[in-house]
Image (cartoon, helix red, strand yellow):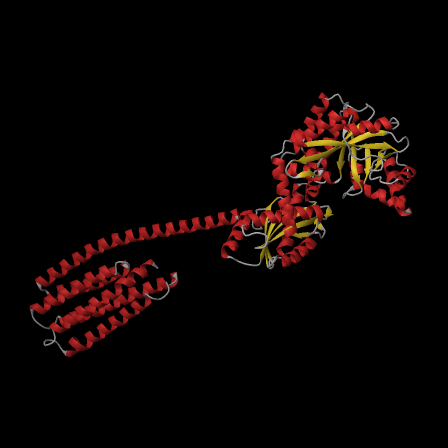
Length: 623
C-alpha cells in the first residue's frame, strides 16, 4: 500500500514527460515521416498517457486500497508499463527510418531519456522499472547492431550501461525504502500495542476486578464530569450491605466474593436508571439520573432486589442494604459535599431505617450541623474535667437492697451544654477517641465503686468499638489490676447491636474479661436482631430485659411474654434484671413474674456516688 501511495505521486509526471517527449519527437519529424507516424500514432499514445494519468490522479483522492487491491493494481501497472514501453519504442524506431543525423540523434535521446525517466518514476515498482529497461534497451541494442552504425552501437551500449547503473541505485534505494517501511510498520504496531495496553490499564484502573463494575476512581471521575458539565437533576448515593460480614465470616471469603458478584449482577439490572460502582468491601456508589425523589424510588427497588435470597454453595443467605441519597444541587454543589451528605444519610438509614433509603434533607442538614458542633466541642474538650459518671442502682426485688450500680456517662460542655451519653460515645468513636473516653469513664467508675460496700457490684457499659479493640480490653484489665475494686465485683454490660459487626472478636474479648472473675450482662435484651443466638453463643451471666417489657406487665399477654423471658433466662442459668420500673404496680408484677432484680426511676434515679451512699444508708443491706 505504501508503494501505491508513492507511485500515485510519480506516475502522472511520468506520463506527462512521455507525452511531451513524444510530441517533440513527432514535431521534429513532421515534414519527413508520414502523418500516421507524426500525428495519428503520437495522438493515440499521448491520449493513452493522459487517460492513465487522470486515473492515477483521481485514485489519490480515494480511500486507501486493501492489500489485495493494491497488489492487483501493482501487477496491472507493471503490465501496462511494459506495454506502453513497447508501443513507444516501436513508434520511435519506426520514426528512425526517416530523416538525417539530427533526427536519428533525437530518436536515440528520446529512447535514453524515456528509459531513465521510467526507471526513476517507477522506482517504487522495481519490477516494472526492470522490465521496461530490459525491453527497451534490449530491443534498442538489437536494432542498433542490426543497422551496423558504429556511432549508433556505441550510443546504445552507453545508454544501456547508464540504465544498468541507475537500476543498481534503484534497487538499493528500494531496499532502503522497504527497510524504512518495515521499521515504520513495526513502530506503528508497537505503538498500537502500547495504546491498547494503556487503554487496558486505564480500564483496569477504573474497574473493580472482582465484580467487573466501575470502581471508586471511575465513579469520582464521572461525578466530576457531571458537575463540570453543569448537569441538573441527578443524585449521588452510597449503598452499604446489611449482614454481609456475618456471611463472610461464617461461610468464608470465597463465598463472600460469590455473594458480592451476585449482588453486583442484581445492581446491573438497574443500569438504565443509574450508574453503579463498587467502592470496596460491601460498599457501593450510585449515580442516579433524575432528582432525589426519583432516586429514592429506584433505591427502594434496589433494596427489594438485593434482599432476595442468594444461593451459595450449601446454603441460601439473605442480606439487605441501606442507601443514603444526596440530590444535586439541593444537597451540595461539590463532589465532596454530595458524598459527605450521602454518607450522613446512609449513616442515618443504618441507624433508623436499616434496609431502606434515606434522602438527605434540611432536617438532616440541621443534624449534621449539630453533630459537627458536638464534634468540635469534643475535640476542644478537657476530657478529664468535662466528662463524669453517675450511678443508677440495681435492686433486689425481695429485699429492696442495692446489689449493684450501673455507671452512666455524662458530658457537660462549657460551649454546648449537656450532651447525652449516646452522642458522647458516638462522637468519641467518630473522632477516634473511643479508647481514651472509655478508659477515663472506667477510671472514674472504679473510683466511685471503691467507696461502695464490697457486696455492691459495678456495672460498666462497653460499646462495639471497645469490644473490637484488643488494646482497650487489655488496658481495662490493667486498670482493674491497679484498682482496689475486686475484679469479681465488675459486671460489663453489652448490647446485642454491639455484637453484630464481629461476633467472634466480641466473644474473645468477653472471655478475657470473664477470665479475671468479672461477669457479663446482655443489656436491652429483646431489642436486637439475634437475641436467642446471642444467649446461646455468648459467655453471659446476667440478662437485662429491655424497659419496653416493663410497660407490658399491665396486661395478661404481656405478663405471659415477660414470664417466658424470665423462664428462658432461668433455663440458661442467667440472673435476670428487668429495666424501666417506673410504677409500684410494675414492681409488684415484676416480682410476681419471678424477677429477682429490677432497675428504674421508681427505685432510684441516676445520681452521684454521694447520692448512692445516701440511698444505701436508708435501705436494707444487699442480699
